[in-house]
Amino acid sequence: MPPIDHQLNLTTQAILTDFSWGLTAVLLLIAIWMGVRERMPFYALMVLAALVGAFAEPLYDVAMMLYFYSTPGMWTHFTAFGIPQPIWTHSGYVVLYAAPAIYIAHQIGRGVMARRTLFVWAGISLLESAAFEIIGINGGLYSYWGPHVFRILQYPLVIGVLEAAQVICFAVAASRLRARCIGHWQLLGLFVLFPCTFFMVNFGAGWPTIIAVHLQHTSTPVVVVATVLSICFAVVLVGAAASFLPSQSAADASGRSKIEGVQRVRGKAAVVERG
Image (cartoon, rainbow, N blue to C red; front, side, top):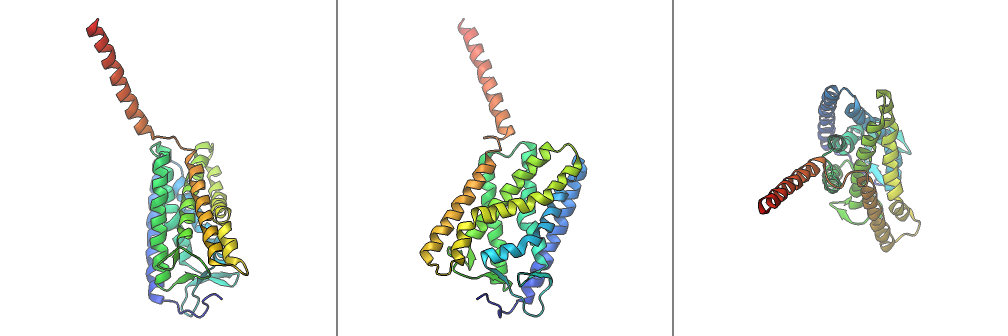
């Protein structure tokens, strides 16, 4: 049974709510500023897509056995599947998903994001998600109950891997959408793209874990195998997203071309001198 009687930590709730919504406001202002410079509301719409996409949280809660402590004093705005949703989930989506995705999409647009670098950012996103959720879990806001394995301070590692893969897939898909848009109105597709990548990763790669933890007569070995499989699926998704990028950034390619050009010039000069 979920920990329905666990007391909510009101102090942690206030800190996380104020901090995450403060970051959301700052990020939105930065996104608007970037949009003004590029004359395209792309980044601001990425932020808003993440805010709206948080309404999909209840499905994720049920699938991954996440339970928010809903004792008196909880700041909530709606309840679905019997789980009240705290208001910081929306700002949390911006911090966890939109913030790194905006940077990655911006670098892709500039041509300075290579495949190898994308994997580095997947690792950074994993660390960001782990830090955010470990604070929330151990701060007394919620928990992942059930037979999850590979926990770090009560945080299931598979959750962070899936969230990192979601960031990468959303960033790459959003950048591809932007590259093919012939009108700003087509960027509204981000509001559909975000939940598509969210469910694709968490359910498409996470289904072995979801099934294993919900089996009527599950066991630790079964959950371990399923979790490893989900992690592998998530890595495959990151690799698939990376395949849309060049093997090296435009800057590296330009630098290599200049070096090769200099070498050719020197080679020709050497031939002339010998002649």
